[in-house]
Image (tube, rainbow, N blue to C red; front, side, top):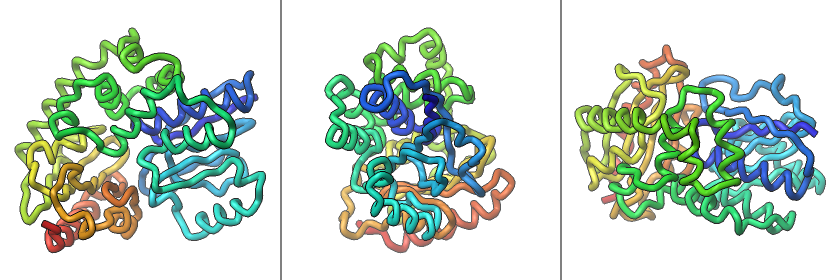
Amino acid sequence: MRVRVFYHDKCFDGACSASLFTRFHRERIAAGAEYEYRGLVHRAGALFNEAEFTGDENAIVDFKYSASPRITWWFDHHLSAFLTPEDHNHFLVCQKDPACAARKFYDPEYTSCTSFLARIAAERFGFDTAPIAELIHWADIVDGAKYESPEAAVEMAAPAMKLTLIIESTQDPALIPRLIPLLTEMPLNEVLAQPFVAPLLPLLLERHEQALQLIRSRSQERDGTIFFDITDHPLEGFNKFIPYYLHPNATYSIGLSKSSFRTKVAVGSNPWTKADAAKMVNLAQICERYGGGGHARVGAISFPPDQEDKARAAAAEIVAELRSKNPM
């Protein structure tokens, strides 16, 4: 059996979910299966190419729903999991079919897709999650921003944080597919020490420091909301906690950046804020207005690389809205 696993690319939780799915599927579904990995990214336009759904089974983890009949497994936890009302309705109809409902799962209450998948695999299929407790623990910390402080999130002492930096920054399309199987086969410090991984870290740490200094010079905080525009310094990714490291009293952050495949508006909230949680704005709902999505506390919008003006206009509107709703 050939299984194609589609995962949220350049995302620690996405890679962990793909790895956990592989181990679960091999141990509980098809011991002799072969696995292939394909990263998916949020971008303007179509997110899926159905011509790629060529496995005997095709799984999507930590990414939006596809109504394609070729998709046999789906796990997600994002509030904005459905591109259209039709997709949502397709999923609801699927849940009335026991065969379909037994392989497609959704729960936006979960911190990480990894922990959600682990629970489903354990409860529904008898999968033993004990050997991968470290991975599940760190997926929740990274995807849920459960760091003890901004310093812990930005200074990245833990192996999981260094792997997150590598996963979010890599331009090698073969790297994450090589990493994925290892994440559930060995401790994270051993994954980090692999000969094809360890040499990448020094340069990435240097770039991380450069990004920190760039955002320091560009970011402004007013009425509880940070804004920065670094589109003239193309980056494939940056640590999303840098704004709160630099402006610890802020509630929200909007960052405008550009990479090889999109212009991105990143919209987030400070995990360490003292703001009244009941008054916090649902950021996924804001991002959905512009074709993006995410979670209640963090989201993003992707525009084509040549649509900086549209991205900048959207960012300006969101900044104005959040500054007018400062919950402090």
